[in-house]
Length: 370
View (cartoon, helix red, strand yellow):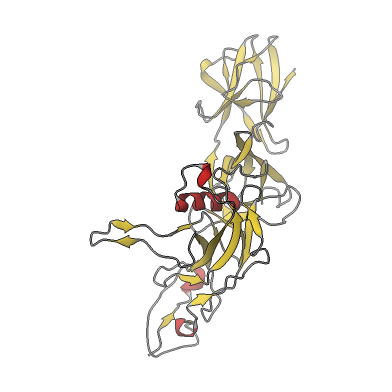
């Protein structure tokens, strides 16, 4: 008897209805026939495999692969595992489910939904350091082989994961990698008809970009992140297999409700977070509410600014979001920063205030005396 999975029409729309059977192979009920699928699918050996890849100076390590032969074309999610040994061994558990021997591999962060992808060199190096158990730089070899395999999974866990062949590449590891992330990534979506990008800027640590990005923008119903300001050259990132997860060259990310958002995105673990900015207000003794009550501003989609016309005293003020101090801006009005200093108003009067919130280093406010 062949092992076959019968897929209802709902598989293609909303999910999978999986059954096993020996008969009734109907044309209106597509069949997933694993008996015709090889135990492995092909992870291609890259041209650079025999060369040395320096993980401290490389951005990423690129691979291509083929889709498993499921008998029909199915949406598949791919993840990568790395090991110091050619044979991948799963963790050993005792009768109570406690791990007695750890797996000899690590699964790298992120996933892909196409048959090509780039793995973070920094993430690979962190996995190598953890697997090797190095505790000081003198333990790190000048070069070493490491091994990769690709894991393919479908949305329904009834069907087991399928693993590719193992591919070896040669690397120069580092005890501490200074990652070479770019300073910016860019969000782009249907708020502008996919025409205008919104920059997110990386945080900096030890004079290096961390790969954790933050920016602010109005989002409509869907968007993606991409690596280039003016092109779709790979990589770009879309919705992963669960909320808050990203995948390379994947589908659009859905926005729950149109509005202004704080966007946080990490290339370290391929995650994102959207925080709604329901309001931005002026607060401080330069306005009527003092430090207790904000004067709310209004977002102007045409100018891209939060705006208000109001009377100001010759005193101090700041800006904050959502009537809370968790997100606030102050300091130099041409370069406002999170938790910046109070802003001094030199002369009392009526002002039009325009606040442009984009990314750290790009925030600014314009005060026009009326």
